[in-house]
Image 1 (cartoon, rainbow, N blue to C red):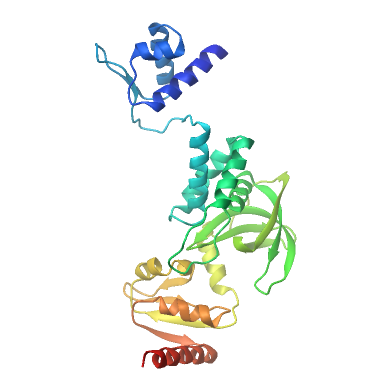
Image 2: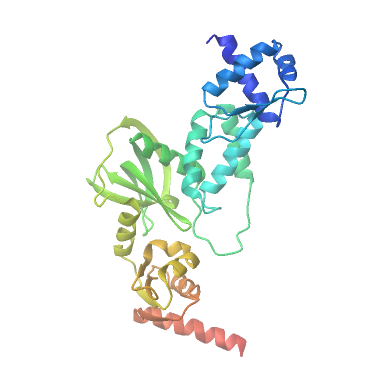
Length: 319
């Protein structure tokens, strides 16, 4: 297929995507070719997997139809920018389809021209949203894209990481998986210096730097990234312990406390355990307040004292 033919087919495909139906004559005029050439190019598109329907007669024409698989799409600059911004927003935790949006974003930004990437970044940084419910730290879509690409390509990554105690140190890891838990994202990686698996919260990662060095994928113990992260998070040390036995199904509780998705464990069909342990007494109180079902609490004395004081202030304010 010559370059002229290829270019003409791309223009033909672009035209078919802009209008529901085209007559063969209109397409021939736009492409400055014969109707016969249009028919041959339509057949080539069909061979490539594009479902182009045609109807004969005076009212006949050509149109793209729904197929069994999604063929490649042609996007103009404005469309590409709009889709990239939407995917970045979704990947940051807005719509509940974060992981799917992230995979699509990696594919799109891999082929996005540099001039359009700057437009996407400018738009993304200019957009703000109002969250009417308390949310955890939002993941940076640009960071998500960088980490997802490193996971996909098995590329060693260097970055600075701030621990829960506030200290920051450089890390060098082999990224393997990204795991979403409510509004929080975690990077599951093999730490090269410690020779062990580690979990990193994305809101604590700064200055990510791909090294260009690629290695083979590692075998994760247990094979399930989400289960691995959930187990590690449940065992992580915290300052204040608080575990609630909730008289409601685990799925129901999980839907209402998204940030604790990895810390809810079913006991039976009607009961589950919610580990609300945290370094912050205020966050523990907020988590327990989000539980709409009856529960009993097993907690440290300082947690119980804080909850009693909070309840007393609330009762005093409403009396």
